[in-house]
Figure (cartoon, one colour):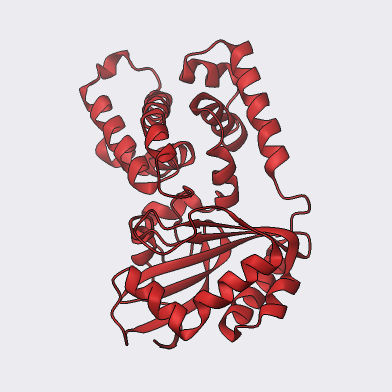
Length: 307
């Protein structure tokens, strides 16, 4: 396999790694290490280079996730996966997220590394159990058991009543409009009674340190951070000076519409909703600057004013 052939395979390897580890940075490190392993391997002994690289990438991703698990448990507040832009013209290296919604990645985070790898390889890439077993180093019966547990867990945590793309975009637009208007009643009307808001500031941006639940409570929090003083306070927390122009738009994030806020030339906030039927069941608030770096390389949103 030449460097050009590896480059062509790289998106698939990134896709595997990203689904297992949950961040673009870690996924890229894993794929780079896989390339180094391939470069040092006795290639005459490798019958199927692509299978070899998928195996190496998966095993490196499992090892990386095991190391990261302890850090994520000590993370300040909820840990959410790194969002990536799926807008037209987005950086080619993040096209891997087209079919990996944040809600699914959040559920995958609750699995063991081996369960997660078995689920990803079998469910997302349709690899037969025998091949998955060889990749993760387990027997086929054990691999089937890992995948079944993972599949059952994902099914239990999925929204009760999923919404289609058009309905999802409509809910996102109404959510954004109600936030901008500071309309508490309109917000609450969009939520299921037990709606949850999960914020990830990573200790570097203002975000709830615990999952917030309840329509009225979540609505009051959102209207508070959306008013002029609340917005200014948040922007200061991420190093954006007073008076800086900001922009907001509905954009594709991990293959689904999300409300994206830019200020100071970078993405500072992403609201991704998870519909539950005709209403919103979960809101992911992503504000950790380190996790929004890839998003910041996308195009600018629609200018909407200043603070």
